Image 1 (spheres, rainbow, N blue to C red):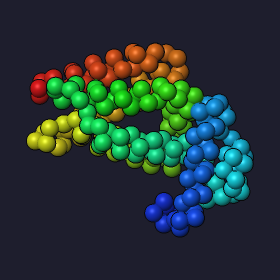
Image 2 (tube, rainbow, N blue to C red):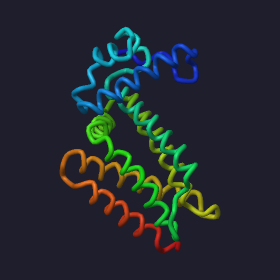
Image 3 (cartoon, helix red, strand yellow):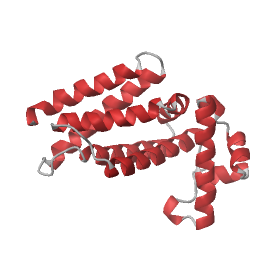
Length: 198
């Protein structure tokens, strides 16, 4: 499959609207039936676009679902910016952010399973989305840190917590652990890394 020819910032207004309809259709189908329900022909029909149009923007189903997760992460960032993390310590505030993210995914279990499955793909476009989600989640967690926290150390901690979060989500969507255990693992990891800083 050829790579998408346009990046988001190069799209015209009408192209961006079509791309957004495709993403929303994939989110709806994923929420209704999970990963297997997101078939490109069904996405095209629901978004009212030609099948070829989808491949102009997305290299694969996994890329489409991963791009949808990027949008979800951006929306989470907007919400956390409006309602900043709460907690007495840095660890408490980081846990607040990650638990809020996990609760949001818990509300849409089939869709969450679909996007986590997609993120495990070896599609190069998915890898780009993975990096983008990681960057956004790093910024979101960054809102929980004091302004004088050492930037390089903060980046390493947020990256490590991002890995714990993703692996916990993989365990949850595969039925290995419950959603409560996912939150507990995040809580434990955050406190192990951050309690020494107060």
